[in-house]
Amino acid sequence: MREPQQPRAMTIMIFEQLKKCSMSIMGILNVTPDSFYDGGKYDHVDAAIEHAHQLIDAGANIIDVGGESTRPGSLPVDTETELKRVVPVIRSIRKISDIPVSIDTTKAIVAREAIEAGASMVNDISACLSDPEMIGVVKQFELPIVMMHMQGTPETMQQCPVYDGWVVDEICSFFEERIAYAESNGVSKECIILDPGIGFGKTAEHNLDIIANCDRFKKFGVPILLAPSNKRFIGEVLELQSMDDRIWGTAAVSAFAYLCSGADIIRVHNVSEIKMILTMLQVLKSRIQ
Image 1 (cartoon, helix red, strand yellow):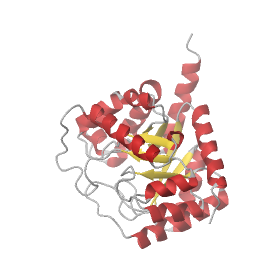
Image 2 (cartoon, one colour):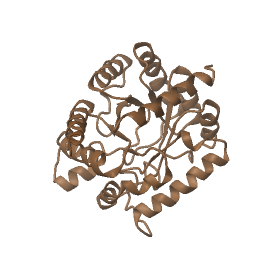
Image 3 (cartoon, one colour):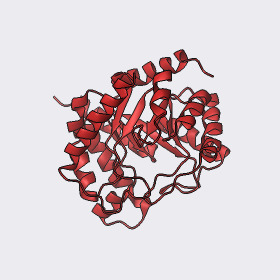
């Protein structure tokens, strides 16, 4: 098993990187047969590693490896299947690069074995609610943990999502509770990253409100991750049928997030295009007088 000091060193590196970058890009690597956008493309180790190379060359700052689809209507997979999908890929990535690797999982045992294989960050869409052991893993290794807001489960979340009040206020209340939970279980606030959960139990209107008002989440004093990549609401707003056409809507959201929303990490499939857009914006912004 890896000693806690090594992951801790990676934690420091990740957060130092976030401070230096105007916005970090998290490249998505789904090693699943059924993810909504790229399911089946990278569900073999060789294909996954080739794509990891492409993400790194394109300018990704973090690679997010997921072995369980969380598309609307999806069902959970068993632990053994998830481990077989993600662990060999993470080990192989670690052989070719020291880029931070995030494990996208809600299972503590998957997070632990992924960390032992070389992952340096946990991305839990349930914010440690699905598995009570997850918070202990995060505490032990002192790694960054992405805690996301979701209404319902992936299987049920898009079945008429409704909020009693303004969705942004409800997410803020959720974040307050989750931060308190993490700290009460010995996890430093310095290790927490918050994700408002675009598309996870939200209508298109909810998603637009969240993106437009993402700066409200900065009050918690931790990095904010935004994950709009090619999601359904973009197709609804732009009246697009093909998912491949959603890249330009994703680019617009990414540009808005960089210029206006205060997001620190943007999680996307199309790293090359988003990297070019953010680089151009950064150059232009630096010349404003």
